[in-house]
Image (cartoon, rainbow, N blue to C red):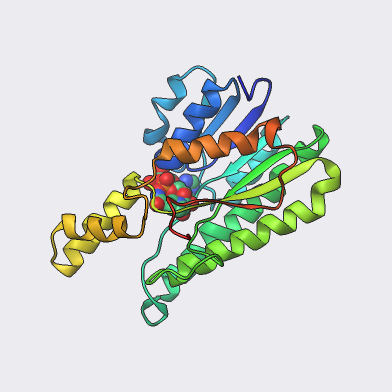
Length: 249
Ligand code: NAD
């Protein structure tokens, strides 16, 4: 039990990486507050021992403040919520740009700013921010807004790590390659529809980015998040942890 006696809050825990991480953290003995904007997706998670489901739209500043007032202790914060906008610079709409910045960056800053004092008061903890290899690590075609915001996540991660290291706070980012998740499948379906091509062809293009020859699983990312949450990673802070099936080789 690597996370016994720890309380962890996870955003976007309704599906994909956030959900797999909530299940893994609970299996490792943590008390998990699993949050998502979609309460339906949380319903069965809330029946899992160790997991409390709590609806939270990370864009809702009032709801974030209310959660901050409710929480009396927190050891691990996993900022997982994020949104993939497609398109190169000439195709990026103001709406997509603003939504990407708001959800992928500003909401992460606001939730962390709200919960950090509780973590510090409890003697410290681990903050894990969801970034991507599509960031300052590499330029990915058609991911202008997404890559820009995930690069900002790396900057935010290092800033938090530098400023709060002396108060027991560690902050690291996870940078996955392509991970099989409900939203990835939806993106593949939508792209195939838009371009009038078979889904299998679009899927093959996503797969071609991965030298390992397969997509990552949400459980593999959850295992890395577990390491970063646990005390065994006590010497690790300010890092961008690449988990990408060899994409950046
Ligand atoms: P996903 O995109 O399938 O699910 C996202 C979840 O976020 C959903 O349950 C949704 O209800 C929730 N959500 C949406 N808006 C929200 C809001 N305003 N407040 C709270 N919750 C909200 O999950 P995923 O593909 O595992 O992605 C999770 C994170 O991992 C994202 O930040 C994504 O950018 C990042 N990531 C994913 C991949 C990948 O290939 N899947 C690769 C790199 C990084």
